[in-house]
Length: 590
Image (cartoon, rainbow, N blue to C red; front, side, top):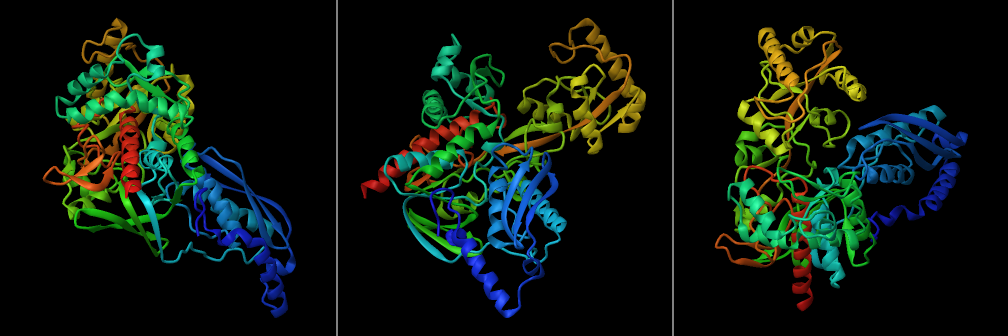
């Protein structure tokens, strides 16, 4: 039923031969659809709107049958949409219909392919290629040495390490795409003592320095043992990503957070440049079976021993029995109930994390009697429209330092703050929606500003007075704010909020006001684990064969503030590797 290269159903491998037989039979009984009977042939073009622009396809028909679908043009997010852009054509050809299920996890991209194909078929004049078709599966039971629940960075890293140790591994991913939230990240992996870190910095690569920085940023509200272990192995994890996974940090090592130390290993193409090499390694590993669209509904246990899991796989029941289980299900900030319960000050804030981040592990933990750690924190972000890429498209505008005002027209913060502090400043000010004021001096960004206005995420006007009126700001307050900002800009010194490089707004328009809102990209909390990545019970003893890593086990590292970009990916890699190694050792020892 599955293969190791993505575990696509094998039933469609002989589709063309089966289709030929079907056509012959239909001709014999006179039941052939009009398109087949007329024998429409040729290649036809279609297009539809995707997440980042137009998606174009070529659809090839032979005697009324779809023989090929090729995406010829697209600007979708690298890593996020890859599976949809390849899987949707496969489904359409296999089922001989454009009207198939859209893949989950990148639905905009999937639907763009789907409706572009529809337009191409309509242009061809062919009929009978629009039957509604749903993916199906049969009830099945599989046995594995190690079961990994979740196909993000922690899950795939743990699966690779377990497989490399000789274990037979099954990975269950609830979405159709892999990568979790990591694939949509900014492309940073935080680490100290990597070879790159040692090559590019003189000081700051000692683990104790990193622990001290974390202690400062969290106000001491962290598990020092867990953070210290991570710091001591973070450089090794970065080297492993480079040497074993083939990840390229082409932008070098940079400072992130509020520390000047160079610890942020950066891939300029974002999270896709990190995750694509990882999942390619996982899918090519003969010891790993990855099953997509398999949402785990419960863990199977006997006493304190977890023996597997049950998943919903296209409506069928998939049971996986395993000697060791690793939970790497991501966070919970897509679940309104858990946000209200664990992070009430961020309740209702839109999320930019993976749509799979619904806290699935929380009821499992409660049923097992596992210890949970929540401290009321999130990875806070600022954005323009809470789209799926953090700095892509018009969201980039919220990262540009200019005059920022709240909905009263008051300046309330240093506009260049690190994004977690930015989020905190908006929260403390009670600002749910701020406005970034741009002038004509930022010509390079005018196309993005115009796009934001077209999407009703901003306004433009020839004067600042007219701009404030369009936004709905108090005219007197906004005028006073602009005057003070220009005064500080003329001095070149921000006496109010300490922003470097402050400059006055241009004297002539046009001017733009771009909406900036708070959003979340992670929720801190979940399983309490030890340095062996074992899940702890409420009495702090470990479950013998249950492990966890990643965002679903992040409560011991963060309080309410995210100290530095790349920390979550680094922690997920470090403890994902530990979980995989220890789970394999346990399973293979039996």
